[in-house]
Image (cartoon, rainbow, N blue to C red; front, top):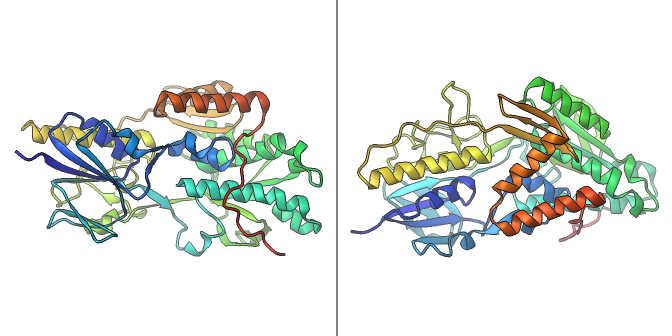
Length: 420
């Protein structure tokens, strides 16, 4: 009997979990991703802000499955799905047949109809995004060191982060730490501690998904780090010269976008309904409606909890969905009843604001301050893949904590210096 063909598109948390949990099942698996690495996205902002190197949070997908002969890994870009022929369409023109398909293709940043802002306000979803942001932050200080015009120098030393969710808050806190703690002794013509870090939020508070008391703590911590918080007005323009908040123009040369996400085009590939963020609306067993054995998981899917609220787009949710889909596949192959509908178990929300400051909401327990920061660090180290990388990240953090020096401050693939 021919093994069941499972195709998994996307090597993120959800896709990798599916493949891991199908170990030992009578299947042949094809894992497809347009990048050759699995990314530990919760720590991506630390690459963007010079805390960690790219190799500390990303690992070759092929390395994961080197001892799994039933798993074939393809470096390719998917452009569509032919559900009638049961084939995945690649950009190269090839077609990959499947019996069961799992789409875990993630999401990218959304500019709410202003995609023209992306070149000057990059988001943070990939290693390329992180190194671009890191390069721009470091180059801003380097250019300011040589600039003689006070107005241009001030614009170079102004950093605007759009969106006060976890990513925006974490970026603002660490860029402030970089400017005020790490860099001051290294420059002669500028005082880096006077850099302006502006965090813009169209809503009323930072970290709106957290309890209000934790949000208030985060706000106070950011303010103590010198972060300028701007609430209640959206960004209406982003250019190479600066950003407009409401109707107020702020000259700046470094803008980071952390305000929204848009799902991959999986719903369009399948011709099924999607929510406002483009996420595919799936059935309670995570199947694409009316498409047979096609599952959509992670940031690509709109999944509802029992109370009707959406499952958050975080790593634990994607891993739970991947594990569930693997159970469904194994049950079908074994001729057993399908598992009960997917049920998301929320394990808590975490965010860090800077050195020795974080917030954690487990529902039954709320933590803040240095205790939360240590719990946050231990949790992230635990979820890293492999002892080597756990030790590497732990050592990097320990060195930064003791020395106050960020070690990953290399400017690579240098962009053209602006001529003013």
